[in-house]
Amino acid sequence: MSADSFYKWRKTLGLKQKEAAELLGLQKRMIQYYEKGSRDGKPVAIPKSVRLACYALEQGIEDFDGATTSPLDITRFIAESAPDRP
Image (cartoon, rainbow, N blue to C red; front, side):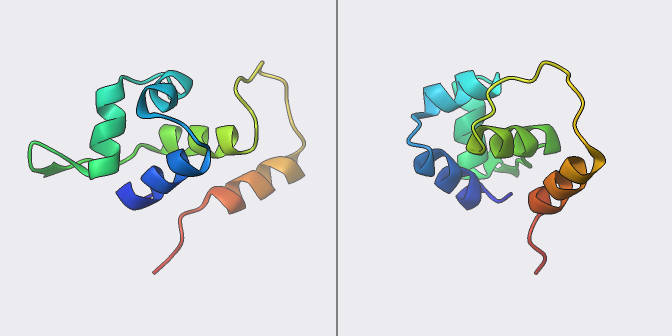
């Protein structure tokens, strides 16, 4: 997920930076770094856990109780979460 994609994700969900931070369990400053793509001039990668959380929120999942899902659901989830290849 690129910085631009992260920004578009937040805007598509109609979230303010503070709201996105709260939903993702992050500080607002991290949202700003992810959207800028850098911190103090150094690149900032968006961790896989954050990318997966973004996908879950996009699907309407705000919490997970640990219940299992079928292997088919997991396979589909992984396939849909994979980054686009150049």
